[in-house]
Image (cartoon, chains in turn red, orange):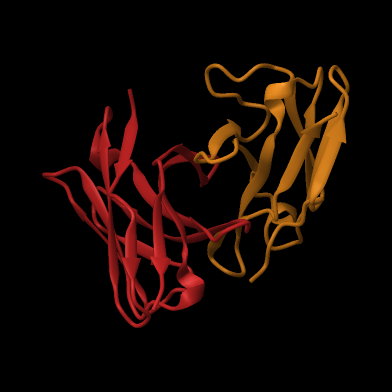
Length: 121
Length: 111
């Protein structure tokens, strides 16, 4: 079955960087995009950006432009999300999700299990 | 950042029908982009519930249905059940932001 498995929880200090991985299985990796979405405690879902797994093209939300980088390793069927200059308000669960094109835009299915990133001094 | 607006909570008795609205603007829903809906059970990752025009992934019952008009969309749940208690989010694309956007989320409670 189609599955996305993310790396484990992280605790980082303000100003540091974090790298979260998302390993795909059960489908042709290069056929789909992978999106990253985060959810701060008790808050709504927030889209961060995406990567087209086939050619590596990326698009980032303006909010995270300059701080986020999404890359992929096609041989490992894994996508990585790097977030730098961490702030306390970056504490959140970070999800990856496969993008499935529907009428010119993506729906997100399935989702990874989530990775809790805690920014604490 | 532009968001899609949903009511914070809705509730209903078992068996009843509840609806969740999702209000956008001319840059997202009003621009003709599809609206997708997700269900997030407590402590779990979101799950795609309905995509586009009432398309349900395998396993999603037809008690869930959607409609869309102008700059708004809505999700209806009929025959409300206890395991429908969850947070629900709408999602679309915003052309002015060149970004995907989510709704503010709605908590459904079964009385």
